[in-house]
Image 1 (cartoon, rainbow, N blue to C red):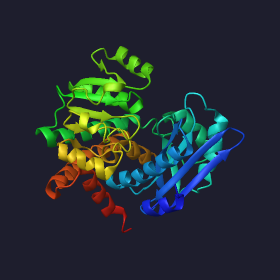
Image 2: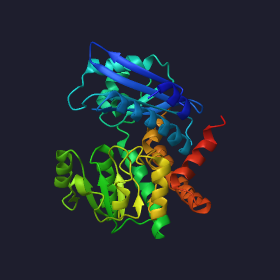
Image 3: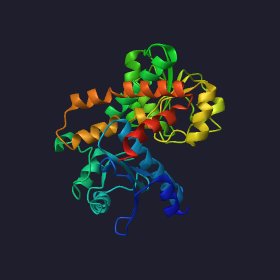
Image 4: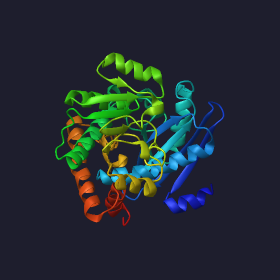
Length: 348
């Protein structure tokens, strides 16, 4: 990849490569836009196959955060960070102190939070070296893990999609397959079960899925290798992105895709249009998974959970607007969402 050329095409402002020999930290921080405010986005820790894969991920994720914050009407830009490593093995206080020092060098143009592989404890360690973090533990005056709020927003967005596709927003009796039993996925499942949905789950980490099954015996476990051909009304990707692609779309039997994972469409233009032609309503991930960023932003001021939940419920109205525009303009939902977001930040 010619990185500067790619940054020019995608509109990125800054990319910082981080290396700390003492702790083994290898990370990348990407700032896509600060037009509406400082870039706020989580840090992801993942065992990437190579550096190029990590670069691709951080560029896509940071761009998505710009659109996410704009759709949520927040005075924030978009940024993201990825740490290359195994989150189950390669962690220490010193490791995150080093990362906090790198964040601090950006002087507030990037504010971090949790993402895949990162916990509130990790955030606490970062905060010992930089003030530019959110998602701190509640006992430290923060909003805690934003995953429950992210899950609530996805749930609200899923109900908006159900209203558009089925005529009402009830999820009762609907078969919903949740891919990914992590923090967000597990909280989403609780909302779905409470409403009477029939839930199926899958996860590449068998122990996570089995733990969830023991807690909720009514859940059906699905083999990760056959999820796309599984009978379901709604597919909810809540793990890594790119699961909506040229191989999975022909297999899907669902009516709706609504999940928490970032960058679900492997290629927006190609796969967004394929879904539209197939009649599957796609709720853009960066629209309905914005509860987490709403929660994190609120922490920058005086945190109030009731206000956060009320703001997160606005996802329903925005999703409804996107779906109506998609139908009226005969365009994929991702494009309708992009147009709405861009109208809020491009000319700033």
